[in-house]
Length: 395
Picture (cartoon, rainbow, N blue to C red):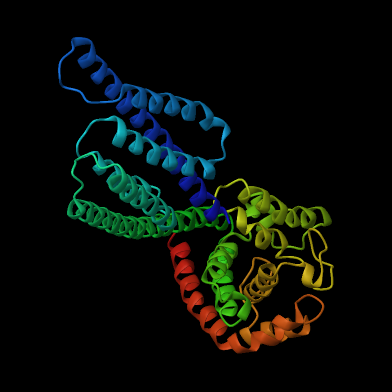
């Protein structure tokens, strides 16, 4: 939704800027035309056949549209501008005295193409084609009337319109590629920012090193088997939620995070604040707002006895219910300061025991299909942990 809004804002900004530029250019052109021809009339030299009344009327209407532009809706303004172009070129046909004034109508498809919408190009190209045919047939500037000239004029208009359609397609293709490039770059940047956050949290506790990355891997591997996550965007969001789910622990003192003995009531309540703190942190970072639900609700329980809001059952967002399973599995299979790791099989047994109380029963049933994948992730990550341990031993 955020991306769609930004794209729409881009198009609105582009169209507004284009409207202003077309009006300014039209005003300057008409003002120069009037001035140019007035000078020739004043000097009484035979270099002008222009009808000054028609040109001046066009200039006045251009000024009125520039004034009314602030009060007209954006979508309507596009049609006002293009209709004005048709009017101006008709005025120039009758008022410029230019023997090839029909060529002004060829500009309409080019201007319409600048808006990047095939529908608009088709509509106003048709109108300009009809006007070109009508005025050339009924009010030919060059006499006697030549039907071959008219046929060639119409053919030229069709050719220009065809090229304008091709320009739109090429520009839209380039724009889509640019959007995809910017999107991919933004996603890479966001992931880099996310991983920086994660490192800053996990650096406080050697026992939780890699926890967020593993939770993300477990969650994504599981979600790929669920029909609710067929959309790749949802998988990407879940991946980032997994990385960020414990970001709020940056606010927890190391003395509490690394405590080897049982936590006091106050310390446990402090630990529980990490979900709310994390949610408040990411909602203030542009591009991460959509990850809030996973960060805030991943410690809620199916029976409503979790935290921070005591949501239960389907009121808990699906992403948070998936993360709850991944988080619990990794916590149980990881060595902590206060206990040793459980085996993968024992961790699975405990998850099944929590079916319908701590965990979503539907998800627990589906979890069997990724058991082997989770075991593989767990064992591969253990190799990384062993390497980390050796690094710590060196220091």
